[in-house]
Length: 286
Image (cartoon, rainbow, N blue to C red):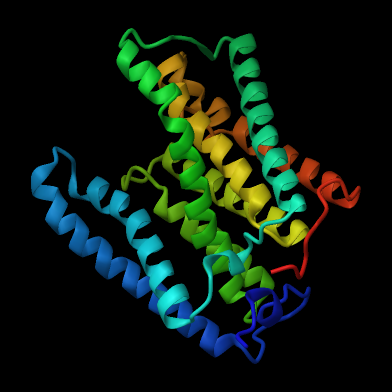
């Protein structure tokens, strides 16, 4: 009987370079290599047919390639269901998903409210009504799918596979990988570095939600909400003063100090919620 990630990679404080580290690293390297090769192949095929820089095409191919690599390694090579990485169906999982969605929505509302009150942004609804409603309504299922697939990859496979080596190392490396994959501009400016920092912090918060619940459901809900907000705000909000982007950020949400503080507050709320047992943590259920 194949052991689950929770059995073979239990996140124990102080664990460093445990006995399962070498096979864990081999699995992660195989996953990374497969993802890179597939991304290069897909981007080479797609690039001549789209009006985008190769970097943008490659970055978009990474998400598809990562999921295909995950499916190949999990279903065909390891002979296990994807749900074993933290998506066990349960009443607690449903509560965690709902809380994650609500927490993300509240965080977006607070950031928007602060932006409007301070005058750093204003409501600016796109005159293109087709694009507006296609984004507002059409991106709802897409955001849920993005949250689900990316959590399976980053907090499911990568984080849990690296836990036998080192819990802090797994946390840092999986969050760094998440940040790099989501970086939109290869040119390094102050806002680019702040975007990387915000994405890294967001990855840490999502990993923390996994540690305190033992499942990915809360992370999926939170990730989906913020992914939806980051897409929709581009057609309903405009930022007025780019000179203070380091403070308020842009449509990327996490590339300003205000977004960082919001993420820190969300982490605190998750910890409080979990300690009160309100989510019904499901450690060891998968």
